[in-house]
Every structure is written in C-alpha cells, then in structure tokens.
View (cartoon, rainbow over the protein chains, first blue to last red):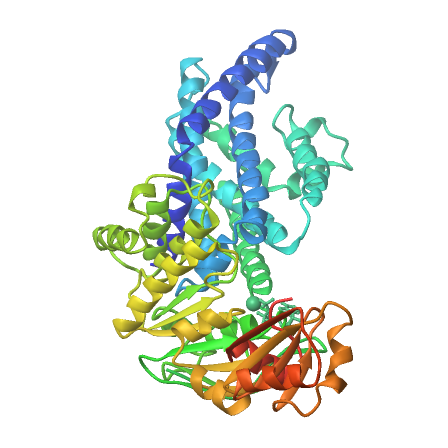
Length: 250
Length: 304
Ligand SMILES: Nc1ncnc2c1ncn2[C@@H]1O[C@H](COP(=O)(O)OP(=O)(O)OP(=O)(O)O)[C@@H](O)[C@H]1O
Ligand SMILES: [Mg+2]
C-alpha cells in the first residue's frame, strides 16, 4: 500500500512533464538511428553479419534506459532529501523506508518501459527489428533500470553535494556506455579491459536486447544475464534501504 | 495521549533534550515554549516517531514509538518546522498524494482535500502549484495536510513563525476551531501571545530542560508579579538604575534598552520612582506576560 502511494506521487509529478519526456524519448532515438545507424553505418558496413543499424539499435535501446535510470535517481533523489524533503514528509506517515525505495524503483521501471516502447516503435519503422522476441526487451530494460537505479539511489542518498554526480557520470556512466558493447562488440576491446564490460550491468542488458531484436542466442545463457541483473537490483535495493534509513534517522 | 519520563535526546556528545517528563491528555492544547535551540523540535520529532529517544520512556497514544511507529504515525498529523510540500504538485495534489500515504482511498482523499482547502481558505489556489504561494499560504497548506488523516493528535512545530500578523491570526483562529472539535494539539512556539491564545497548558523549555509548567495564567501568577513597569532612561544605561531603584517592587531586570520593574502595584511603583527623584524618558505599566516569566526563569529574552 505504501509502495503504491510512493509510486503514485512520482507519477503525479511526472504527469506534468510527460509530454516533453515522451517527445525526447522519441526524438533522441530518431536522431541516433539516423546519424549513427545510417550515417556511421554507411562506412562501417556489417557487424557480426547484420547491418550496423540493426546491430546498434538494441545497444542504444539499453543504453538509453541505462542513462534514464541513472539520471532519474541522481538529482531527483538527492533533491528529495535535501531540498524538497519529500522523503521526510513520507517519514512522518505510515510509509516505510522499504516503500520509499520500492515505490521509486517501480516508477523507474515504468519510465524505462515507456521510453523503450517508443524507441522500439521508431526502430521498427526503420526496419531494425527482426524477431518477435523483441517484446521482452522493455522488461529487460526495466530490469536494467532497477539494477542501476537502485544502487544509484543509495549513492544519492549518501552524499551531501551534487558535485559527486559529475564524477559518477564521468567515471562510471560514460565509460559504461562507451565500452559495454553498445557501439562496437566487446571482443574489440583489449582482453585486459573486457572483464570491465562483463562487470557492467549495461553489457548484459545490451546482449539480451540484441539477441531479442536480432533473434540470435546471447553470448552467455540468457538466464545468467538475467540473474546478474537481478543480483544488482537486489543488492542495490538493500543498499538503498540502508542509505535511506541512515539519512532519515538521527 | 503522550507520556514521557526522563526523555533524552543526544546528538553525539551534545544533549538536545535533557531528561524531560510530560503528560498530555486527550483534547488538550499543549505548548512548548522556548528560545532557539531549547530542544523543542527535537522533542516533537521524538513524539512524531521519526527520531529515536536516546534514553527514557516514551509512549504515544498508548503505544511504543520504536516498535509501533507506523501505527502511531497513522494517527498523527504533523506540521514540521520547515514546510516539506511538493513544489511541483498543485495545492490539491499535495493533499491527495499525501492522503495516499495513509491508505485513504482516492475519492475520499479528494473529498477531504476539498474540505480542508475550504477550512484553511485556500480553495482558490487549489489548482496552483505550491512554489508561487506565500509563506502563510504554504503554512496553511501544511496544516491542512497534517489534518488529512483525521488525526487524534496534531503536532505543530512553530506553526506561525515568519508570518505577518494577519496570517497568524487566521491560523490561530483555525487552530482554535480544531481545538473546539476536540483534536489534541501539541505545538511549539517562540511567541508568548501564541501560547497564551492557544494553549491550555504549556512547558517552558530552556537548554533541553523543562524549567516551568502550567497554564499560562498559573505560570504568570507563580513566577511573576501581576504587573510590570517598563522604564526607559535617556541618560544612563538601564543597568545603572538597578541600584538606584533597589527596593521598589519585587524585582528589577535590566535589558539593553529598558529596565523591567516587577510589582503587583505598577502605578505605586512608578510614584516611588518619581519620589526618589528620577524621571524616566518613558514609562509603561502593563500586565505581566509569559515573556516576563521566561525572562525571570532563564534570565534571557525569548526572541533575540
Ligand atoms: N540532527 C541534529 N544533529 C545535531 N544536532 C542537532 C540536530 N538536531 C538538533 N540539534 C541541536 O539540538 C539543539 C536543539 O535543537 P532543536 O531543533 O530541538 O531546538 P528548537 O527548540 O526547536 O529550536 P528552534 O526554536 O530554533 O527551532 C540545537 O542546539 C541543535 O543544534
Ligand atoms: Mg525548532
């Protein structure tokens, strides 16, 4: 009950800006597909036996979800502790700490699913979807969203100053996006760096999405990829509960 | 409603609440009066079950705040010292989303929100976001929000600090109506007039301790004289007159700008000042207030 109330609050806030947000989750992939998929793809040719456009679409899909999930759990979460004090307001009601974390993660999942569906619509229009398995990708993206947003929320709840976010983006988010198999296969990376890609939840989601839109088998058993993402989600949620509790008790 | 014995709150080495005893009965309007840093908010937060007592016994609504926090919070209405409204939501949505935290069904939440906005005279602002509201409107909205779950006990931390006199009087009037409905009110304040207006009973807090307790009338009668004379002198600082006027009235308190002379017979005391050959530049005889009680008890003024 408390969880749904927390979700509802986030949705009511979102209602105010959903048009702008859906528009940007529509326009961004279009720009991406045209510039990178078609423009760069014209030089690159095929990757792993498919056109570069088809190959990159699932990667950009997952990385869009990844960035959205991180973005929505940095400033909004810190702000809700520091300025809005929305969590303090909830704290004075029967809503529990677990509800606060779970409700917000549901919201992230919701946002990511909407953005993914819009993105898939655009990609389909460019003929980049080749398998009915595509229907699982919004859920893969939602799982990825929670896997990264839960630990990010924990981080945001533990800091006092938003300048840490610049470090997070520079040293975690951008490298992840560049080296997690979104734009080129991880096999192109020096062997030394590959484990870093494997450690990133983004890579696992990218491979799952790619196998789903192209209709090929993922590099690891699908179950292993999903389990790894679940592990991040669960550990992240536990960390977030701990960080929220610390922040809200004195 | 509230029962506390030896309640203590420490932040590290610092003791913010230093062993206080309290009892608040149903239907009572109870006040905490004290200067900045007295420990009022720290006490309120323990009563609101959001801050854990360091030591002592505390029972709220006959429950244990540590073990039964959610059940207690479900029956409390809390208006914190600093507003924590949702700035991006409308006035109406602030109430309805908050209602959902208590599990109130949506149609009922809308009904109560409309009714409460009427009560705090914000119906016209219903569709506006919170950001552009004035301080007094935000405060009224916070109080309306605290009432959304029809609480048995309402905690108001400085409900009128920072408001202009008109806004304060409106709030007092609304709070008075709540009291008439039988809602138990617990509030903190720096303002004597507020405590005198609203509270059946209050405690004066200073540096984490309760220094006096009783009804406003009772506190004035036991700790102060009936009347107070405020004397201002043009030539010398008020402290210089303490010796010269010694023996007049029961007590003399020099403040930076004036001398307070406590006497049950203010006019008689003024006559005596003149008889000794002193001519203050201004003389004011007034009834004693809680402000005087506070000064007598702690040696300091309340609002600095
Ligand atoms: N979370 C905290 N950590 C450390 N010290 C705190 C904390 N909260 C309050 N204090 C300290 O405890 C003391 C009492 O604070 P409290 O807020 O209870 O006072 P107050 O009576 O409400 O004052 P005011 O009238 O200014 O609101 C202050 O000295 C304050 O600095
Ligand atoms: Mg306070």
